[in-house]
Length: 155
DNA sequence: GCCAACGTTGGC
DNA sequence: GCCAACGTTGGC
Image 1 (tube, helix red, strand yellow):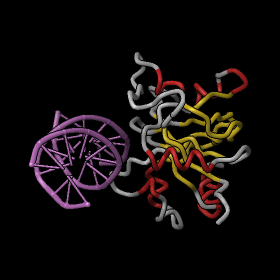
Image 2 (cartoon, rainbow, N blue to C red; image 1 turned 90 degrees about the vertical axis):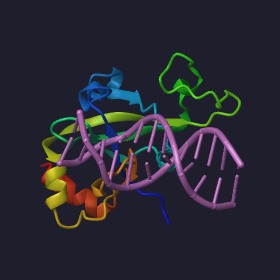
Image 3 (cartoon, rainbow, N blue to C red; image 1 turned 180 degrees about the vertical axis):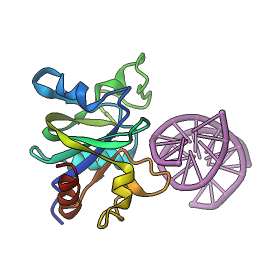
């Protein structure tokens, strides 16, 4: 199976919002802090040019808000080595890192944010992991069909 | 290697 | 603020 070309990534806007990405140098920043193996493994499958939906969690409104693309493939997340960082992992060493991150560049905000509520009501999106009850996965693949549906909703 | 307890995520 | 889901940890 070829690797998916589309992804959804969740972030709490109080921690790092789509606007924060837009305002980063070259609209580009690294996606650090992933500490879940499934999410990490999905990041490792990402290739330069893959498209990413930026989703805001734990806020109001809950919604997909912007488009980004992968500009650097998985490399070690530096925060795992930093004792003072909330994401510090004592088991990780520079010789044997555990956690990776990718770099994303903001493409543009969606003309219209697509709320979780809308996603739930839209046919064809039922299988998205995002919509599963109490879902915690922060990085997930999006099928081309789902991608088209969501982009239409987002204008 | 099992599984209960614990901690975190994140929608509600 | 609550709590369901679920990943992780640790005792055995």
